[in-house]
Amino acid sequence: MFKSIRADPCRFLEALTDIRQWKRTIREWKKRGMASVLDELSVKDVLDPGDDLFSSVVVTPANPPHLTGILVIDACIPRYDRDAGARSSFLYLQLLREMGHEVYFMPNDQLLREPYATALEHSGIRLLIGYGCGRWVKWLATQGIRIQHVILHRPNIARRYLKQLQKLPWLNLLYFAHDLRHIREMRHYQLTGDTFHKKEAAYWLNQEKKLLTLVNHACFFSAQETALVRDWQLACTSHTIPLYPVDIANEASPPFERRNGLLFVGSFTHQPNRDAVLWFAREVFPLVRRALPDITWSIVGRSPPKEIADLTENGIIVLNDVSDDQLAELYQSTKLVVAPLRFGAGVKGKVVEAVCNGIPVVTTRIGAEGMANIEGCVETADSAVEMSEKILSLYCNPTRWEMLRERALQYARENFSRQAAMDCLAAGLREVKSANCRPRSVAEQ
Image 1 (cartoon, rainbow, N blue to C red):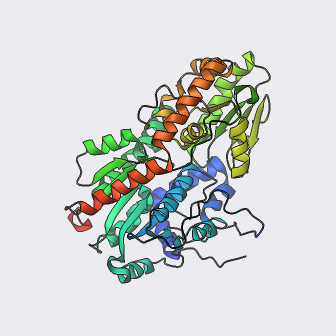
Image 2: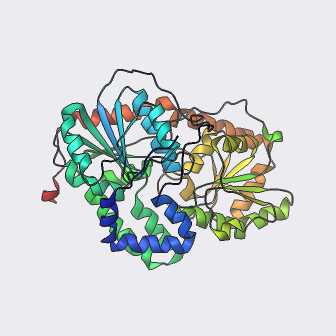
Image 3: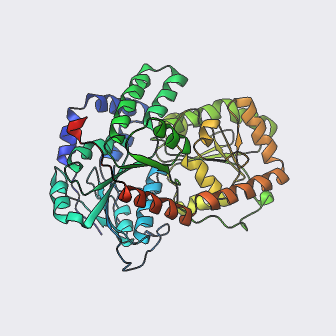
């Protein structure tokens, strides 16, 4: 099955005049190669009728009662098997539909990416493809109060639409902040001394503050970021929601003695993941191998750059294209997940996913941040020596391993279950609907 595709030409015209975006793109080409970057700007995915499209799709009722209409706008159709942000977006689209909302999704790139588009349609979500160059505004205006909420993801995407959305006063505007980008950029600068990231941090701090004055409500995955934004005392309300609304792993999965090795999961389009893997490979894993010569470390992530792809020796296994089913098998056989992140922001999907699968995690303080009361459910260490010691202690101690696993599963049930996410999302929608204040218009900024 093939479907026609056409990118939004206006998006590319805007990009031609955005000097900052050009600089970012050139830097990514140098770090990851042209093929990896072009893959984000074009479509090579097609639908194979033999694919098991819906292995991770929750099928919702055929005709649930519609509460309200919701339009969701994100960078692209969520490729849920590629990175944490896309998986989170995909799961929340399904959850909104399951709650009884009429859900429309519009990708900023206007590209029909398969098999992901069909997976969304299978869940009852309607796609707006071919609505670039402002055609989406006309469509939205014709819907009237049938569409009451618009959910925007990511600061660079949200700012492209807010000016037009402000002209439709009946809409409630919600912003899903996957993280506060200015924090990530500042930490990158503090770690590397690269002044490019210092300038980016200042730029995104200004953009994110401005963005939050233009929406009614903001949702953060990180409790720390929710608290920070509340300290800014902006007009919009805010609260914390779970990164993933998922079904929690069965406690009867394979025990300690039937598991082996370490696992890292993360997209290599994300700079903190590239840095984490290289640092762990150079500084931490050799110390672990010195004590356990037979231990292996599996690295899972699409399109690894050459310097990571070439790590395949001394017990390191680099797995590029891994399906959801293959990843599930790895979670069933791995003894520990490592998340050695030295910079970043927000809640880290790799940590949440490990916790939900009941696998003990060794990470950094940055890797564990944003999750309230996570202490005692994961091990944290920021130096190479301390991290290697935490890994060895946990890897060789079945009693400690079982205790951490039980704590992780309990934490996941309380914070990342589908019901917990549904309750948080419903509360946010009620709060924005009952709010009397409207955000300021762009003209008032």
